[in-house]
Image 1: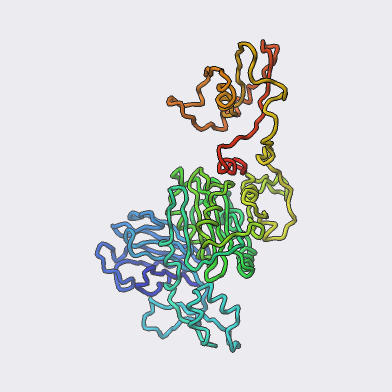
Image 2 (image 1 turned 30 degrees about the vertical axis):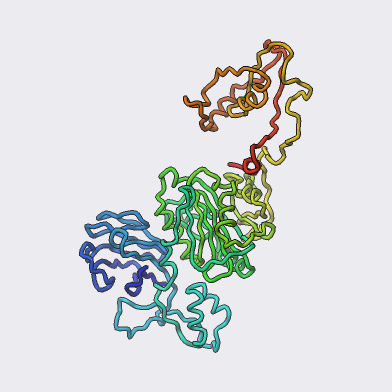
Length: 507
């Protein structure tokens, strides 16, 4: 294994970082930096080959930055594969690369010992021609252009500066859409009618620390050995792989393959960003680490707050198929989604806890695709038992009776007082405005805790329902009422867009 510092601007050759040894970088011939604001010993880099990460320590008086976050003198942080840092503010950007190299692959006669090129052996000694597998490995690593360069060079080695990798252009591909969605798109992606969707945390990756939530942006590892080969199989079968997932501190992103004919998008929700608990730059750095490890171009969609982009709502999916698939029509029947939030009860597998939610399964149901758990998809487990939510919006009868009993009359022949009783936000005011006021009734509000002073409605939290339920008793005629009529929920929608949104599963 070898660790290299690659310049994103390709202004100098890769700089090796030996395992456990500290390397000082700054102004000088090694980096070609002449800016006097950059110290000769600007940062200290120490690679850990076991953990596959590099400790970055700020030494210079003027700040460097890691993942967009400034480092002051004496500060330290860790970067994993693909992690980026700038030697001075947001200038002189570099990224970390770990490669598997043999000592025989180095050119020991090179006159520039500290600016070595990475040498990749594309053939074994017994090979006479490049195999299709060889070409695919090279295409995934370096792109189609490199394949064309080396195709006729049988039994030869290819010398390539890692600065030629598209990963040096990662940061240029991030876009903010409306403040609610962050989209990353790698070069080389191709659209497809078949989408293979994946959640991220608990589906493609897990924590190295063994904790439920990551302790840092480098606290991750691939979930199981079957993940990467399975993604390659999807590409061979013409899929565009997408990853959709939600958890309190995660995002929505989309993954595709370098030089492949398919895209693998990952969609996830990042609540931490909206609450300013997680810096956008830090999460971007984590995404870049994972992309560089997988060696696949990735399109990433990140929902940063509670909106239609948050699973299980379909905002991210609609953005993918309408704005990020090059106008290629997606076939939902040939597409599928994989996620760990599947509504499985405790003990679905010996020793397993109950799933924290059913949002991934509900997301697949909303978008009309097949659904699999990670165990079913990667490890060939049999389908596990699960539970749908108790409330199924699609089962509502729009033609059902409004009142119970059905022969009850809305308007009395004489004078009367109607008392509306029900949960907060259950539709009491709407019923009065839509059905009673047109009949000549006068509305008197005694309870206003659900509205603001300007008479606009505010969000009703879960606690309000719990508190109401704990003390709720259904009214009885013995209390002095002449008649008690229940109002059934019969959905009415202003337009098809509202109806479509309501009929989806929600959080």
